[in-house]
Length: 307
Image (cartoon, rainbow, N blue to C red; front, side, top):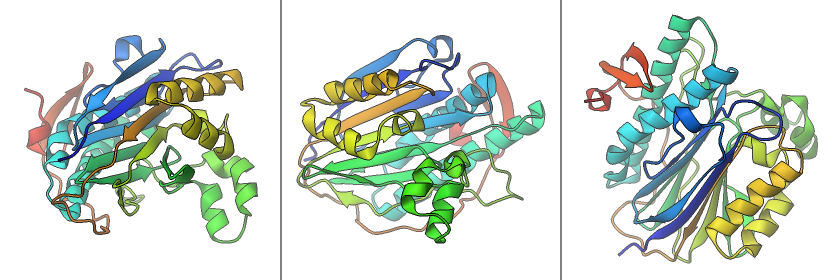
C-alpha cells in the first residue's frame, strides 16, 4: 500500500514584477486569476497516485498569466487519465497527450490574439512506488536522496544546449545571457517544432525522498548548494518551502518565485512498470473549452470539455 505524501507550495510575485505569471498544480489546487498577485500558500497530504506541477508563463503580464493558467487547467482535465495509467508507457502517452492538447490550445489563442506567449512545465507524478518526472523549459525538478540533492529535470535553454555541444563550460552556462532563452516550452507551433515533454527516467521512492519543483525565480536567486542545505536541513515540507521562497525574496526577488516541496515516505513498488519511455506526439481530437473567461476552439480530446 502506498503511503501518503506531505506537500507544501508557495508562490510570490517577487519584489520587482507587478504580475505573477507563474502557476502551479497541487492535486487539483491551482492559482486563481483573481488573486494571483497575492502571496499564495497551500499544504496538505495526498495518497498516490498524485500529481504536482509548476508552470512559468512568458509573454508579459496578462499573456504570461494566461499561458501558465491554460497549462494547469489542461492538466486538471487529464489528471484522471494520468493517474489511472497502469504502466509507464500508458502514463507517458497520457502526459504527452496533455502536452499536445495544451500546446495546441495556446497556439490557437496566440493566432487569435496575435501575440506570442508560452509557459514552462515541471511535472512530477508519484505512482507505483516511484517518481515519474516530466519537464519543458527551465523550471526544475530536484530530488533529495540520502541527503544529496540532484537535478532530475533536463534544462531546455540555449545555454544548456551550448554546454552540451562544448561551446560553454557548465559554470559559464549558469551565468550566460542565454540561460533564459528557451528551446522547448508550451506555445510552439507545429511547423516550428514537434512539442513533447522530456521524460527523464523514473526513479524508485523505496527509501523515501524529498522533491522540489520550482520556477527560475528560485534558482536565479539561490544556487544548488544553498538549495540542498535548506532541503536537507528543514524538518517539514512547509518549513522547507517557506525558507526557499523567503531567501529568494531576501536575495532580490527579481522574478516571480514558485516552489512545491513534496515529502515522499518509503514506498512499496506496485503494478506500474519502471521502464524508460520515449516522448511520441499523440493523436489530437476536437472540442470546445473555456479557461477563466477565455473561450477558445482547439483540436484536443473531448474529455477535456467543460460541462
